[in-house]
Image (cartoon, rainbow, N blue to C red; front, side):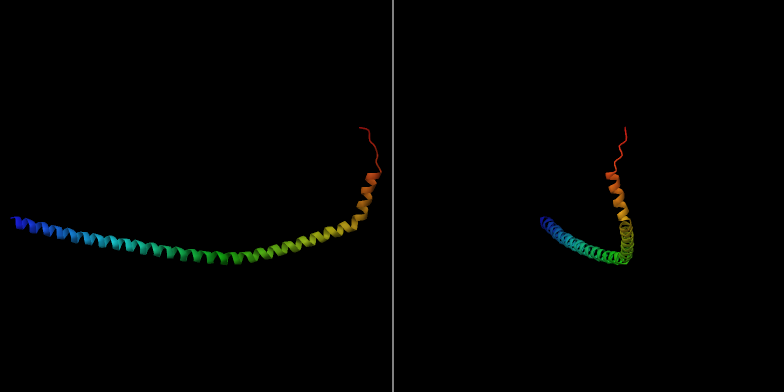
Length: 112
């Protein structure tokens, strides 16, 4: 009976060792698969980010051209208005100076 018990215990120990090896291989496989999945996810994220950055650059390029044109048009319009104001200033400069000097030198006291 003792020999049978010893053989049974040995069989159980062998089975336990085999089960331990299987569990260890499963853990290693799972760890490897998790690392692979993480690497795949990082690559997908990088690809998606690059795609969206390209998309944004195209969008920005398309819309900034319109802004530049509008900015140039506004700048031209502003220059025209500045020239009109300068011409009006030159045209009326003598009259304005005369009126200012007259107001300063011809003081009319008023009782308060």
